[in-house]
Length: 383
Ligand code: NAI
Image 1 (cartoon, rainbow, N blue to C red):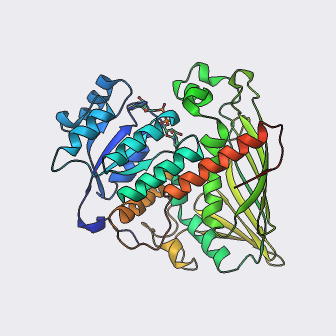
Image 2: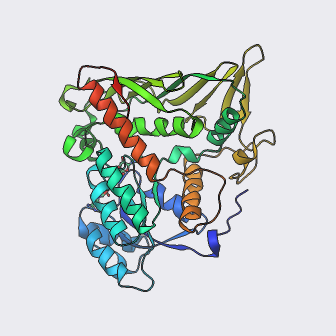
């Protein structure tokens, strides 16, 4: 149970790049990191507009001398201070992740980076090599993996409750971008512009989330090959897709399908994962994250609830308020930031966290999907 004590008995000195006023995800990072005093936000370069970023940092309570106009200035200045930042979060558009992450590691900082980690496997491998040589932790902000029922799903599969895994189906298919909303929304505009978004829109922006959940729940499955098709139903988004379908075959003989979309008109998030084994199935949906459906063939279906004593120990480890009270996105992210802190401080932990390997695998998945789709939807070997 989490009761608010700080990892290692102190707050990590934390900085942020991006996540400025009006950004979509900046506040979620700050709420999660500071929830239990585990991270203290002492410096930032929060905005592409240096002055606006400085003003916002001061409004958040930063020492004015540590609210910087630019991340390069911040890394240099903080490295020269005895009380300089130890860890930095990067919550900027995708095209900047690689260069900022690299600069942070070169300044011996631990990094928590937004997804997708970068644009190519080659870049991800370079970051992984740098993190290893500098002995620094890189965490990737796959926030949904902080939900407790994802741990229960993982534990059920590990215990063999579903039998042999045969079929996996995951999706993140919302309807919010069924028209060209980017004309009015800057934070959607960069997502559909290759220069900022990279080689894909929905595959990288949305698909990497349930893909990582599949890796957490099914760590023993390795993709052998995949086939992807992608479309730009809002034509002005081409060559970037706003809808994609992926077929995957695992080395074990299991198969998977994924539907990733921003044009699922009428749908909210619609992020789900269903795992089917020879004995039974489980299903989780991020709009009802406190429940996990467990169906064993020939038995009545069960809806498992967060916080209940019948869950596995790892699914109860991050409980904060007991059963019955709903927990949500902020709690999941706070769990994840806590796991990052445990990794950064070298403390023992039983739960997995999305590290540099998870970032790299997300990039590999997108790269393979794009490679398949751009050849007309052909099977491609995964590695
Ligand atoms: P946004 O466009 O709403 O905000 C981006 C922020 O970064 C703005 O404050 C902007 O001024 C700042 N920025 C841009 N370039 C900068 C630079 N060079 N230095 C300092 N600040 C800079 O974008 P949003 O939606 O917040 O996304 C940011 C990142 O977070 C993206 O990589 C996105 O994929 C990811 N994201 C992840 C989510 C998750 O669930 N993990 C959810 C939403 C976004």
